Image (cartoon, rainbow, N blue to C red; front, top):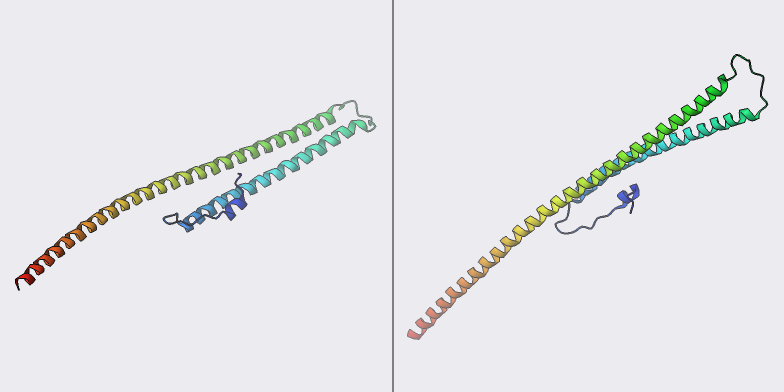
Length: 177
């Protein structure tokens, strides 16, 4: 499943005993959401730039292709190759700009993906650490509870024994009277 901005905004976590702090989870998701919104805005801006440059390149190519089809105007003998060289350079410039824009776009997307992966990795590590700590605390508390139950059972047995002894003493006194 791809994680989208809507996925993050609409994610609901189950509330369980000894679970994570809901406010902390929400704050972290808000940070991720903000980062993804920024990346998406940058990506959209670069896509628009790529589309604009692509359109300009196509227009330049169309103009370049349309010129030879038109009736050739007599050109001065001294500069017959000046126009095609300039047009060729313009087309090459557009292609270079387009190539650079695509490269920048791919770098930004790769950086955004890497950052998102890093955020997810850190969150996973933090969650694992919290889970380990919680499990350790649960284990400690369970051991303490078991020890307290044992002590309570021993105390009750001791009280029962003393009560039985007192009852036996009272019975002996009643027999003597």
